[in-house]
Length: 243
Image 1 (tube, rainbow, N blue to C red):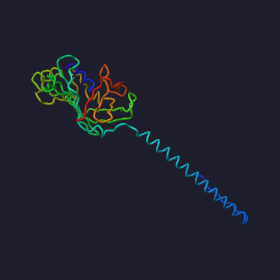
Image 2: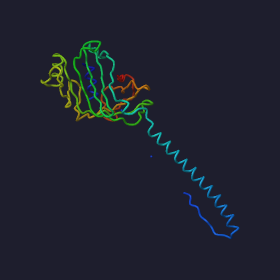
Image 3: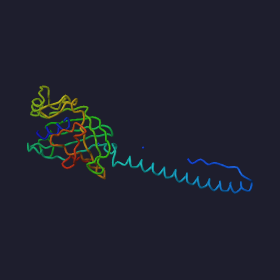
Image 4: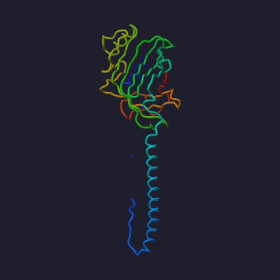
């Protein structure tokens, strides 16, 4: 449960040359006209070259501005992480499942009682909108992402889990397999009220084949509630695989 508390804290707690004509004698006119024609051709070529160069520059700038490795549509789908033992050493095993569209995210963070993650003890669900911003400075190909919170609940799956939820959140209304609203916060589980922490400021990267999504490593205090709290590395960050 310590690992669950830490994760909840973080979650509550991815821009003409003009041509002139002159008058002269007839013979001179012919020469002048010829010269004028020559000048016209020369000027026309110059204009054409100039315009071409301008277009090339514009295309180059556009490509630079939009050159990002992946977009929100690449994240749409279901992503599941491995079943892993809690680093807290409390005997629990944890698993993450993300269901994403090109605009919304939905996370189930499940604590299990068995090492194959087949016996759920309780599930924390967090959902909301998200946006991907520009490229991240942390790693080539990565992007900044902001994951907003619309709802946060915890669902106990056993009587023992009911007791944990009631005690941790200071309530008496938790029930087996019934989602318990913690959008207002749950101090015992380290969940910030959405009003105080409306989003998680993260970094994300997608593997070249588009099958593995990695989030930034959470800081020691698990506070990612503001722009200046974005992770600075992917090492030890959560990785999930597309199903």
